[in-house]
Length: 329
Image (cartoon, rainbow, N blue to C red; front, side, top):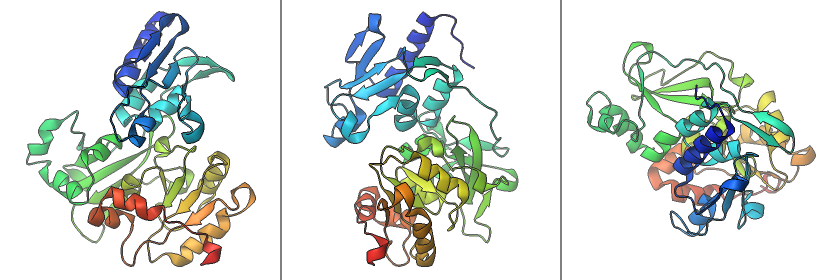
């Protein structure tokens, strides 16, 4: 666990973490504990890596941030923890949490802490190419990368979701997809064989209805997609995973409580799941969610992950945004 002894040390650590996350600082007011960076959302909208405007301002004493250009439009604002969750990789979020930072915000003192994690299978290794570039050419790991690249699971996705590979034991020759809760703790995992054998998937034995898969990576201030499987989730940004075709109580409650009133929930299940889609739509489309639940039917025999594999993520995003009310179908 990271340690800091004084407020000055805390501020220095935070500035370093923020710089690693967002790049070069544009402005820094030490006496106000405020620092500014180029906003990743504004930059992406302009098609550049950094727009040079420095509109994303962070108060690292209060633990909050806001983009003065797009904060109201894109909800690019909130707690510093949300900032790391939205734009950081698993390692960056976990490093932030390892220091157990405390902030004095408008709601009083808030502390972000680490918790006990579920242990991944033995002989499981990270595929993160920033941390382990040598593994790309290692014969032991080469089949894993070939499998993922064939499915257009690119290095950025591998790194963001901390995808791993098991080289021995019960889960040998399987991609391991960990699930992280809001504190960056592992609460579940899914494994997928590199080969189309009978038991392609073997999952953690925990009750999947008592958790939200990879809730760490959900931004409730943007439109959220609801998908069936973990590989759909990897390629469709800001998606929730049912790990099946049925809505369960915790998933419903989490969506109902957290989805921003300005945002939509878009159901994108497999093309063979029309009846399940209707059931889920009828469960969700009520109360304060009424009129904000949409559906998108994938092409025949092509699910979200396969669409990405065939046409790429850019085309996938164009397709899933073609939404319509179910009641009008």
